Amino acid sequence: MQRRGSLGLAALVLLACSSLILSSCGLGTAGGKILKGELAGPLADVDSLDGVSLRVGSKNFTEQVILGKMAVTLLASAGANVDDLTNIPGSAAARQAELEGQIDAMWEYTGTGWVTYLGHDKGIPDERKQYEAVRDEDLKKNGMVWMEPAPLNNQYAFAVTQKVRKKFGVKTLSDITDIPVKERTFCVESEFINRPDGLIPMLKAYGIPLGKPDGVPNDNLKTYQTGAIYDATAKGECNFGEVFTTDGRIIALDLTVLEDDKKILPNYNLSMVVDEDVLKANPQITDIFTPVAKELTNELMLKLNSKVDTEGQEASQVAYDWLKDEGFIK
Image 1 (cartoon, rainbow, N blue to C red):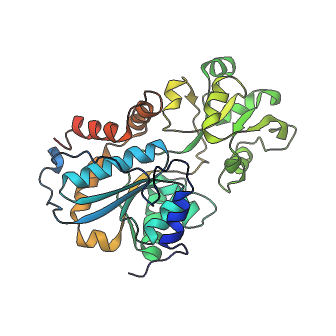
Image 2 (cartoon, rainbow, N blue to C red):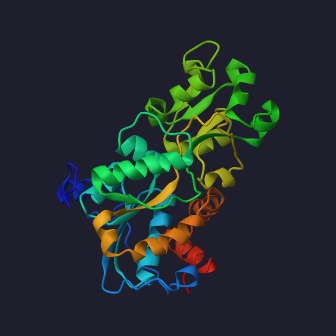
Image 3 (tube, helix red, strand yellow):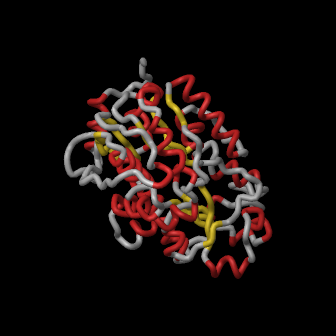
C-alpha cells in the first residue's frame, strides 16, 4: 500500500528526539520490559500470533500510555514479537508514524480522527455516526481500519469545585447562563480557544458569547498549560476549568464535570486503529481487541489514570494488572 504523509522516518525520529522525556534517541519513547502472560477468558481461543512482528504506538499522555501498554501486553501474550513504541510526543508525530508505517496499531479517538486528521471543522453530535464517518473516510483515504469503538469518550469538558457547584447550583453548561457575568470565569488552554470545535463556538451555542458584556468578557479568561488548569481550578483561580473527562486528577481534586447538555463538544470515543494490510494478514487482532474495547469506560480510565498520575504507579503495571484482573490474560 502507498502510504500518505510528508514526514519520513528521519524527521519523525528527529521530532521524537526533541522531547525531554526521551532517555535515548528513537521513535519509540517508552520501551522498558514488556509484561505478558497467556490469553484467557474471552480471548483464550484466539489464534496465535507466533512469529508475527508488530509495532504498537501511543501518544505521550497518561491515558494513551496505559492503553498502549495494554495493547503491547495483549499482542505479546498472543505470541507476537512486539516493538513498544508508546509515548510518542504529540498527535501529529504519532499519526504520521502510523501513516508512514513506522507503527502498525494505536488507540485513537474519533474526534481527533475527524477534526484533526481528516480536517473537518465540526464534530458529529451522534457518537455512532461520528465513529462511522471517521471509520469510512480514513479507510478510503489512508487505508486505516478503525475497530468498533469503546464506550470511553474522552471529551473536552468543564469542571467545577464542590464549593462552586453548591454556591451556584450548576450541573450543566446551560446553567452558566444563570450566574452573574463576573462569575463566568474560565481557565483554559490556548489551543482550546483557537480550535474550530472549541471554546468560542461552545460559548456561542450556549448563549454566552466570548467578548460580549452579557456573555463571557475576554478578561474572564485565564490561559494555562493543560496540566496546570486542574490545580488552578481547584484553587479557585477560576470557576470553570477545561478538563478531559477521563483525567485522573478529576478524582484526586474532587472536581465535578458539567454536562454538555446541548451536545456541542465533539465526541472522542476510543478505537483501535490498525493498518489495513496488517489486519488482513492478521485478522485475529480484531478478535483480541474487540472484547477489551467493550470494557473501556470513562469511569474505568478515571481510576486507571489516577493510579499513574496521583499514586505514582507504572503505566505498564497498571495495564497488566487490569487485564489480569478482568480475566483477559493469566
